[in-house]
Image 1 (cartoon, rainbow, N blue to C red):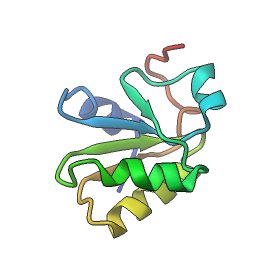
Image 2: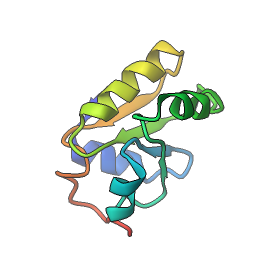
Image 3: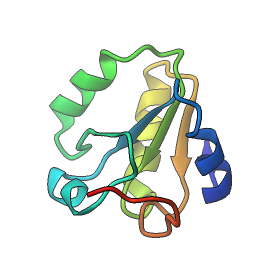
Amino acid sequence: MDLNQSKWASDIENSSNTILDVRTPEEFNEGYIPKSINLNIYDASSFMSKIQSFNKENNFYIYCKSGVRSSQACQIMSQLGFSNVYNLLGGITDWEGQISK
């Protein structure tokens, strides 16, 4: 499900949510949303392996640079039975919240 920035930002305040950054490690190191876990979607085998270890009932808030890769990640996770996956529309490029380095 696609969420606009304000809805996504309010939802990630809940500590039980998992925030996934699906960009490359190089992009991640340039700046990321606090508490994010970096899972490079371009490294397909590692990405698939790591998401399989997550509890499918948890909430996952996913972003990338512009929203395209994170939308793909949401689709993949939904197909694997994850029921609560949320894509940040516009990605970190449009993010107005805090960014860590």
